[in-house]
Amino acid sequence: MKTETERIPEPYKINQLMHQKTYLSNGELKEWKGEFSEVYSTISSTEQYAPTALGSVPVLSEAVALEALDAASAAYSNGQGLWPTMKVADRIACMEKFVNQMKTKREEVVKLLMWEIGKNLSDSEKEFDRTIDYIYDTIEDYKKMDRASARFEKNGGVHAHIRRGPLGVVLCLGPYNYPLNETFCLLIPALIMGNTTIFKPAKLGVLLLTPLMEAFQNSFPKGVVNILFGRGRTVASPLMQDGRIDVLALIGHSTSANALQNSHPKSNRLRMVLGLEANNPAIVLPDADLDLAVNECIAGATAFNGQRCTALKVLYVHEAIAEKFTKAFSEKVDALKFGNPWDKGAHLTPLPEPDKPAYIQGLIDDAVAKGATIQNRRGGERTENYIFPAVLYPASTKMRVYEEEQFGPVIPIVPFSDSQEPLTAMAESNYGQQVSLFGRDAKTVAPLLDALVNLVCRVNLNSSCQRGPDVYPFTGRKDSAVSTLSVHDALRSFSIRTFVASKDNADNNAILQELLDTKASNFVSTDYLL
Image (cartoon, rainbow, N blue to C red):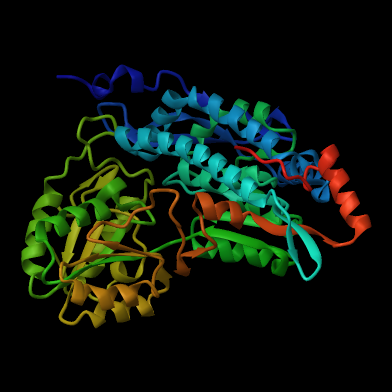
């Protein structure tokens, strides 16, 4: 019989610990001499269960964080720095240099995605490849923007040359569930628009930045990208309190966003770009294709163990088909394979947060105490690093699992008799990101679509909630988001329209003509990128 270590394929074994000893500040990879935090995976590599040590990362001080802020502020230099005044083509060249180097680190990053956050091999590879695609899509959209702005407008006797300009210094705080893709959906558009950045990875998925540190260092001018490690209260809070952060870009929880915003001395000047929590529902109408609805809801509720802001968190199913749906759904949930990320066909994988199984158990116990039953045979089965998805029926508004963004493997099913019921619940909810609607009758679906688009920002017809394709808007209402994170919109979220205006007279026109002929200005130019 093979030991646990022997079961791990050779390419994915942890043969050497990764100790991240440096941080990136002012263009230098500086060695940290202070406290370090050990990084562990909840995946065991021993016969008797024990977390696997992966390495360590610096626990940086407030002083180091403020030094990085000094560097980012100097690099921006009130809009006069090299980076914000650089030609579009030159900023793109820096980004292309970075992405070309990043592609060489695929194997290392994918391996760390599996170990650090428990994401299966297929999804880890997809996250890396999707991030590469996102960068290239951002570059292409930026070229389109440049082409569209390479012209003059004339209104009321005034010429205007309108482009988009940077906002200043951006603090980027990414999430642990997509520590590469969603983090870069903040960082990449912020950078390419001419902002300077300070980036602190999430508490999980932190080591996977290590293979990319040199690429960041040698692809961008000094001070443009600064990467810090450590505790949010020690690193992020002092940066906000300083007042020189112009944009807070965060994917996480609204309580964190509110606390950071409130700590800024001039919050009215602070641009917020936020992807926050959600409680996305599915609404299954009585005429829905049952097999399709079950399969899509399985995908939406259990992909990456429900640890996605786009996950389906509650299923509203019409009472006419609720029991039939619940039975079919529960059987399919029980058939899902649990295993380590590299195991073939493993859909369910270890939870990266050590305390998450106990938290989910608390939600299950609360729901059962308030009238729900666990519908699937394996629901709530515990191991040291996992709790099997529990299908809870009938769920009600009185239960914690209904109100909280559980961010884990538990699925409440709520029966309804009138489609107004889920609409009212969504209207009363603190969240408004997405919804899935399952039904086949156009006359029934039409008024629901018209109502739902005003409650959330994406309605998925007969399909699960999802982020992609990344060129489509990704945002939300109420506590779910501020601003929009997608290729096209993100470029606009991290910039502002600015322009040069000149009255239509001979002297001004002569100056403009000379500017264009001599190419003396990077802003006043009709050149564009094909």
